[in-house]
Length: 127
Image (cartoon, rainbow, N blue to C red; front, side, top):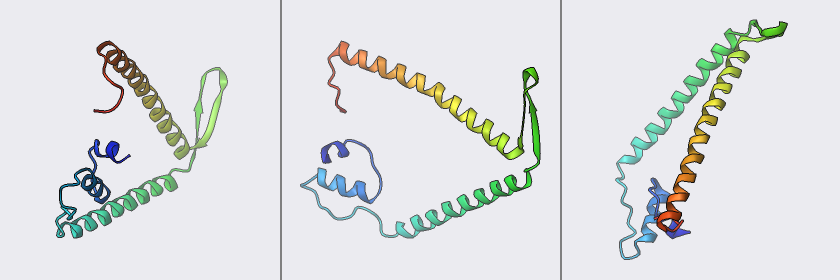
């Protein structure tokens, strides 16, 4: 477990402890500058502040656009729903289609990698 964890690039306190375990001959003293802690705390609060502002902006958008809209399809079908739900539905549909398009590429790359590993006799473990 520890050896596998040490192969990957990690950040933060947990990563520092794992790197210290991977290098038993070296000191376990923290390699973090103590003056950076207030900066990290400020950044954490700033990020949460921006998240809250974004949420409030989107909530205001949703509250202001509750008028029903009617979408007309072929063969006389129609769908009536609040504008916010229509926008959210089509946004989610776009995200799903984009992810589905990426999944095909990832699976093709995995097949190619597996064929190269078999061809060149490379072990399946991470290097």
